[in-house]
Length: 109
Image 1: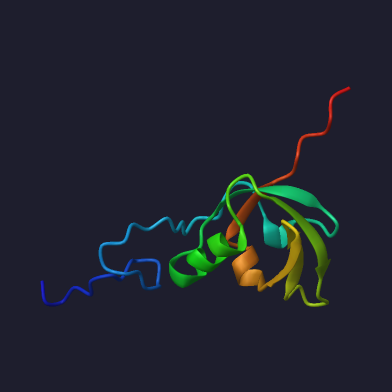
Image 2: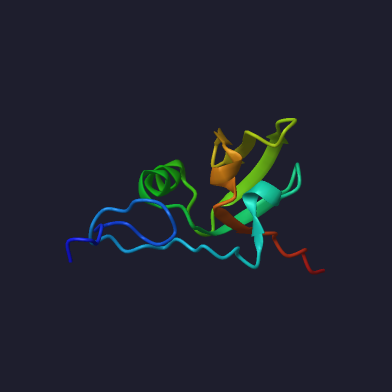
């Protein structure tokens, strides 16, 4: 019991003790915001960030179902500028890689 580090998970980062973990080590089968094409409009499916980063993304409006537009990507892919709601946000590629998105279905008609 003394050898255990409480709040530490196997995937290498800290969580508050007793806090459930939504983190997924395995790559998500879908598209992430990091790999969404420039100019693409997509919807947030979920995000796999944890701790303070998770809370900050929620505060910024990265909620499931939110519409996001990739405005521009820096030369080396970091940062990524997106439009969510009525404002622009710059994300690091590590943060954008934790946000799962889906492309909207084409309009039928």
